[in-house]
Every structure is written in structure tokens, then in C-alpha cells.
Amino acid sequence: MTEAALTQPPQARRGLPEIVVDRVWRFFCSVRAAVVEIAILALLVLIGTLRGSSVPRAIADLAPVTTPIIDAWYAWDVFRSLPFAAMLTLLSVAIAICTINRAPGIWQAIAHPTVTTTHGFLRNAEASARYQSSLQRDEFVRQIGQVLAESHYRVLTTEHNSEIHLYADRWRLSRLATFPFHLALIMILFGGIVGAAWGFRDDELIIPEGSVRDLGHGTGISVRLNDFSEVYRDDGSPAVYRSDVTLIRNGSEIDTGSMTVNNPFTHGDIVFYQSGFGQAVQLRIVDDQGNVVLADSLPLGPFQSRLNPDAPAARMDLPQAGVALSVVAPDINPTNQPELDTLNLKPGEMFFMIRPLGTNSPISQPIPATVMQGDSVQLGNLTLTFERERRFSVFQVARNPGIPIFFVAAILLIGGSMVTFYFPHRRLRGIIAATPDGSTARLAPIARRDWSAMRVFSDLIDRLSSETGLTPEIARREAAPV
Image 1 (cartoon, rainbow, N blue to C red):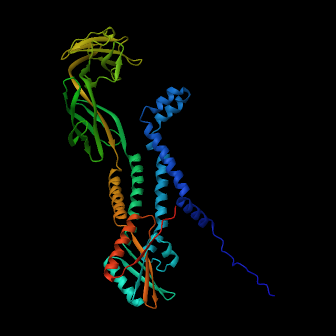
Image 2: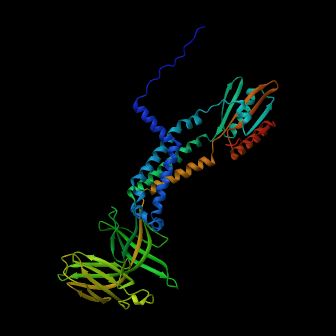
Image 3: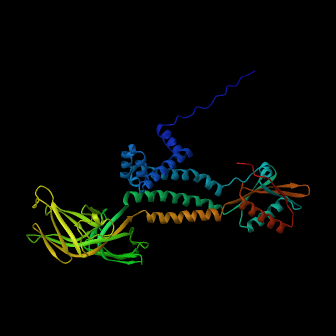
């Protein structure tokens, strides 16, 4: 007996670059890696969302030992952090590579589908129809193909083992909808990166009437509050309050608009939201040389004075004058703990006090004064004029340059989904064989647990029966559990 030695042909060794590319490609195509990436991203989103709530502080109250961690939590802007951008980038690359990886198979199914099938597939399909015709095999194939073509199916046939194998489909190009869908996901993630890198959100931009404040964040825009108006209900609560603003860049007005609580003002990709309002005081302060130290309105409310904790108050450093200015308005609710009010200011009055600021301050001790609206007072070497009371408006300002990207992504996402759901790729297979009395055909859809596909197949069989005058034998099987 002769023994044949079975030898395998030598395999070419792959280079290091090829191995690295292959492993990286497999990593991005891995479902397990995708699950981990999505879980990490979801955790970062949760951390970033809770950062703007009272949940972290509640945790610190329950477990004081976590206070340093909670403080770091509040200080960390997750959505602008490198880990968040890295996860978005990683997911974008993974989606792109998975889409590229699937593209050849999708195009193969569209342009070059497998036509041949097996009798086992047809027998085990959830639904199938068997026709017995007196026509010869080729004539029966042409008749079936004509009916399918009239139903907008593409019909492909091939002869295999003396039988005609048939493949028919319609809306095959709808499978390409997966590409705009996945592109939309990538664009959403990319828009998140753009918004985190170049967008901003300012939760408290306070501007008194008639004053101008820089928006900042590299926009080069200043905001002037032209007018503020409010309407109150019978119980004294504000019903509607409105701000009229002008945007200024390089000294020129670039836009004007109004906003209320539920009607923001938009300029390009910057949105201004009306958030609140309060009392302000318009001042003019000059020194003994006639230099203007301050000519602006000062918002009252963020500061609390020990002279009357319930009254609107403010504090401002005037470093050029070497003093710190404190302002206290009349108590807005004098019946609430009146014993705390040590000033007892009348309507129209305002309490002012300057304190030394720095080692070179021109004063050595605080100088207080109560001033009526429209009057002036001498405080050290400064002349302070209480011109009038005003209002200030509080805005939330947000800029997200990723919004146009999100808009295009939404169109692609909705369009791709609509094509996928309303024009699904419908396919069926069949075998037509010659018999002594003519020919027989068995047809079955390529579908599993798809009620709509079964309904379409049933309608197609009804039409085929009507056109051919034949009564099919319908076989139905329960779908195997997944």
C-alpha cells in the first residue's frame, strides 16, 4: 500500500502593518467593543447631565466623605472634555468601518443575488405555494415571470439539475438606505464633537436696561438691553416679561430682536433665552479730578447685605478709585422679619457705602450714605449720583454650531428610515420543474417572522392565481423560535 503524504502549501507570512490593520479593523467591527463604547458614552452623558442638577450635592450631604469628588464633578464640564470627544470619535469611526465592512455584501445582494435555492428551503419556509400547470416548464416560467414583472419584481432565473430556479425581488435599492442612515449617525456624533468644541452655554448673562455687556466666548459680540417690560397678575406674580436687545460687533449694530420666556431670540447659531429679571440702580460716579469712575447700571440681588438680608443688594469693586461700593435697596417685603432691617429705607431711597480696597485706598474706613433718587452725595473724594432705578434682565445664551449638522443628519435619518420601513426589500425564491403532465412550481418568500412580508406574498399569490387560473396548495409552518 502506498501512503500519500498530505502536505499543506506554505502560507505567506503577513507583515506587521497588515496584522495591525487587521486587528484594528476587527476591533471596530466587534459587537462587544461597540457595546462597551456605547455603555461608556451613556455613563459620560449621565454624569454630564446630573452635573447640572442637585443630585451630586445630595450625595455629598448623605456621604460627606465624597465632597472632594462631588466638587470635582461640578467642576468637570463633561461635554467639553477630551474623554467625551474621544468616545464620540471612536463611535463615529466604528460606525463608518462597520458600514464599509457591510457595503460589499449589500451590493452583492442588490446586483448579484444568489438565484439557486434548495427544496429544503422551500419546504421549511414559513409560507409557500405550490402550483401544478399543464404548461411546459419553460412556458410556465415565462407566465410566472410576466406576472411578477407586472408586480414590479425583478425576475432572475437559472437552470440547475434540469430545474429552473427563480429569484424575484422588488425595491432592492432600498437596501442602500442603510448608508444615509449610518451617515446620519456619524453626523450626529460629529455634530456633538463640533458643539462641544466650539459651542458654549452661559446660564446667567445679566444686563441692566440701557447697558451693554460683552457676550464673550470669542464671538466679538456685545449685547445692549434697550428696554425691559413686564405685566403682572392680580396676585403680584409676573405674567409676561419681555426684553428688547441689540447685538453689536465692532461698534456696529448687527441685529435687533425681542424675547419672552417661551420665545427665544436667535442670531445665527446663537440663541438667547429670557431667564429672569430684577431690580437695578443707575449710577454715575466721578472723582475729584472729574474723571468718570462709573457710568452704568448695577444689578441688585446677587449680593446679600448684613444690614438687611432680605433687601436687594449689590457689591462692586472700583479698583481705579481704590474703594469697594456696596448698594442696598428698600426691603421688598418689610413685613418679613422687620427686625433684620437696620436701614428702614423709604421708597425711592438707596443706601450706599464705600470701603477701602487695597493698601493704597484714599479712605481708611467705610463711608455710608442714604441717597434719594436723582440726588448726589460726596463719598470721600468721589461724587456719587443716584440717577434712577432700572430693571435688569437675565439671559441664558447658548451656541451650538453643530445644529446645521444635526439638521442634515435628521433629514438623512428620517429619509433612510422611511425608505427602509415603507419600501422594504421583498424577495422570493422558487423552483419550477417539468412533470409528465406539464410542470410544477413551488414559491416561497425570503422572510422570517415578518407579517408584512407574508401579507405581500399572499397578495402576490392571489394575483398569480388570478392570472393563471390555477389554485395553489398553500403550506404554512410555525416559525422556529429564535
